[in-house]
Length: 250
Ligand SMILES: Nc1ncnc2c1ncn2[C@@H]1O[C@H](COP(=O)(O)OP(=O)(O)OP(=O)(O)O)[C@@H](O)[C@H]1O
Ligand SMILES: [Mg+2]
Image (cartoon, rainbow, N blue to C red; front, side, top):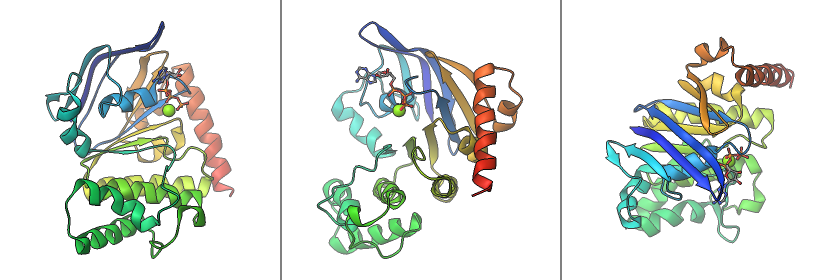
């Protein structure tokens, strides 16, 4: 479904990705974990063509997209729903208008269907009747859900999450994590989650890829990762354990 083949990416004289290869199969939830600045967001941006690799190949559903033009990328972007780290909602619009915005612009749907779709997406992210509210009137966790609803409205088959739980309190973190799992299963999407939260990854990932210094340091199922002897992976696991205890005390 998504395949990276020896992807390299530099900015000036700094090489961020030094040859990354992985494959994500249809229906999987895969987490990419790594320290800050290891190129996690850069990897996601390569998938939707916001950045191009210097070398290597990226395949989506068997199509090699790394050399695609903007125009050729349109259907790929439609397939891939990106949920950015910050909700980036339009403050001047209501929640309803925020979710309807892309639908009205990209799909020529009659207004009645737009309304139905927005309501459906709000329900999918467990938000009720908040369509009339403005982003400033709802919590940050709710804004993140609205931003997810906005992405879901376009019916993507692949969901790309950039740090979906960073900066959230433990309870909201667990709720968003459960939502990612629930939606992936229910909508049968393939989900790639970029994060540094091993606790979340262990909870819902089918597979975890750990990036470090431009390379893939470790890759495996949560169970395999918990047995890893790689020092950085062990550090992540220790942190996850602390987070788990911290969270269960909340
Ligand atoms: N467009 C760009 N131009 C120049 N440098 C960039 C660009 N995008 C990213 N970088 C650099 O590439 C490195 C990796 O960035 P990236 O955003 O992928 O990190 P990350 O793993 O997502 O980190 P974080 O966990 O903090 O979000 C950083 O040093 C960043 O400054
Ligand atoms: Mg990032």
